[in-house]
Image 1 (cartoon, rainbow, N blue to C red):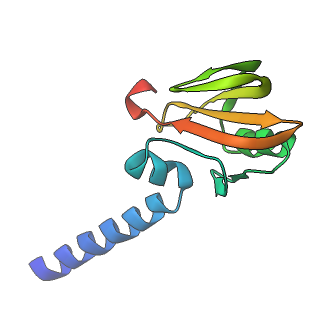
Image 2 (cartoon, helix red, strand yellow):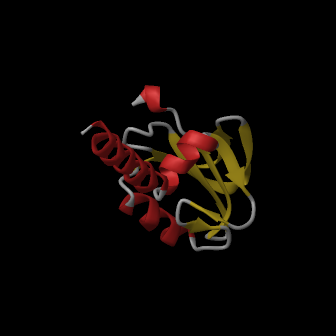
Length: 119
């Protein structure tokens, strides 16, 4: 009786962990809670995407656009005044914020800081 129960619990834990790790926000929250990219992609946004596509993707994931400024600061990074800075709040258990830095309506950088305790 004990062996089948342990097998079921182990299988459920494995399936649950696999399901959690398929979400990009969860992977970043667990393994790289603070970061940025200047090339490639993260959170469904690729450097080079249009700013509107990046905004649409982050909104689709349940994030909320907090503010848009010309330049400023996103966490630990200064953003030049000739860049557009869009700040999104993460409205899930992941907590934190995501910033999209763009120039000429194209994404140049994506910055994130997930903080589950802030939610």
